[in-house]
Image (cartoon, rainbow, N blue to C red):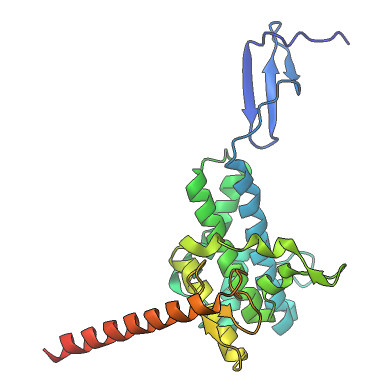
Length: 258
């Protein structure tokens, strides 16, 4: 086969599904030319992050349903096909009616549409929007992993079983949860509240990084985002937050008495 001349292509087309750059030579032939491959924009990193997080969320939900009602995760009696995320959500809520708030349920209901749009059409999200979507799903997964299976991601990511020591990947969550939406913020706060309920002897302060009351004295890091616990700063922030909440309560009481 003769070598095609790609030095002066007449047309070039990037295919987001195959992540390939298609060149059309002067003679009209189609060539995939790797030497002049144009890398996808940085935003595409979030494409795979979102896809993996949605898949992880689906597995969390299915695993919990399977632990309670093993046959419920299958669509047929032959047990060949399992239910989708959209089908699994109502089953999960039947088992745990107060597990998720309205915003979280809405986001999970949209997950299939988001996944299909990303997989089958050009990735059109702006970087900020894609990052926000990814962090919302990450925060919800973080909460569900601990709520349903008592698995704390901050703790899991921080431990390397091969060396029996700290794993630097534990810092991956640090600083990510500083600007969450309603669904993600409630998930982060719920995780911190749940930790306190299950660990009565632990003292939790407000985390300077993520804003949740999850900075654990016993662990030495925030159980929501894995940021190191700064006891002095955390204690001060917590006291200020308590004063703010008391001020809001008294203001509301005063308004009701008028």
